[in-house]
Length: 501
Ligand code: ADP
Ligand code: MG
Image (cartoon, rainbow, N blue to C red):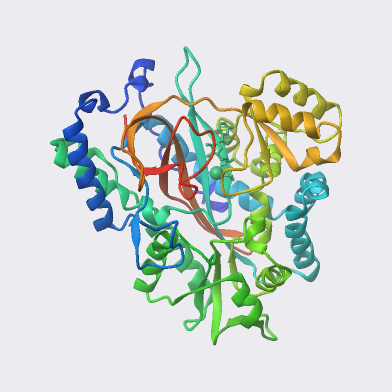
């Protein structure tokens, strides 16, 4: 067994691929050919929407987010978007490293406490999550098995005169979504290409097994829990517009003869309980795996009872995905602390190549806590606001601050402890591509876009041993360059497929 395998690693063969030239990256995939051919676009759009409905690329509507009586296609792009093969491969290859890193940090309370100390002072939401973490640490961790499902998101930073590079936006360690729908988009894009008369290009579009991969992880965790009668609990929001994405995973699990139940946090408060062995029960079911598709934003804890329910789950014997420690590892503050010299070395000293692979994806991230280090970077950002992004400790899109607003907010918070509720990050400047975005109710037009590639990581730790560590699949989201922030759920980005160039 190699040192790598001991730590739950199995290395992937490295692909040596030619470096792309700037002009190749600049050419948006075949869009020139369809430019101004309105009839073709119209026909392809009709075919694409019907294919999306047939394949199950679906979402509930804004108007009726709690019912499936009227549904719509989930927003998606008419064509796949170009993605450099070497950057896709790089993102794939670094995913196991990130899984391992996230897991290791989640087991280091001293680091989490120190790194999040100032954030907790300034941000009540992170403080409440941390209270729960502290409480379960004090009481002792009930369940030694951990299931991690994360998604590391990247953009392709493009500086004049240089090839595009893979740069991490963030890593989501809770409720990383769209694996279900993303796995269905390639079939839609293949169909569009076939209708267009491009069967060779259609055949080049890769399949995406993200949903299957994630469910392998959930199923393995369920088996390790060791009770055939126990269920997988999906914790969901009251209004789940993205329910079909979740249903894809549910169906996979049911097909493996694993019972799935869906409940809201308040259901757990009202009807959930822990028995003398800390087994979590609700409505007559014992919960083997508690999989969070909610619980990452203050709105998800709209009353104190929600916090009580979260604590109950956290204390239970159920395998949490994620546990509270892993959720905290996904905060923007921890991302920023990881960039500091020596931090990666603390966790991955047995694999220097992993450190290199991870570090290659980092851009500058900066603490703006009170003190000279923070003062200096604030001054730089006020001077050149286009070069940075100001990020509060929030998840779910639409919270980041850019450009003029960044300058204003920094000026407002400059003299106070509120600063610690934010971090600064170098702004990634991706190459624009062109595509047609299909969004219900919006006109279809050629749009200048940027893409964001996500890789899904799945791992399971049983006590101190990683028994699974994989990259399960990917997600490509595309949005108009008009928007600096905002995801698919926010109605800004659309689902896409990488067309590897
Ligand atoms: P959230 O947790 O809200 O999803 P993210 O860190 O993913 O936060 O940021 C949300 C969006 O903001 C991203 O999808 C991206 O469009 C934009 N963004 C975030 N960080 C950067 C960055 N460093 N450079 C450019 N755009 C960024
Ligand atoms: Mg994000």
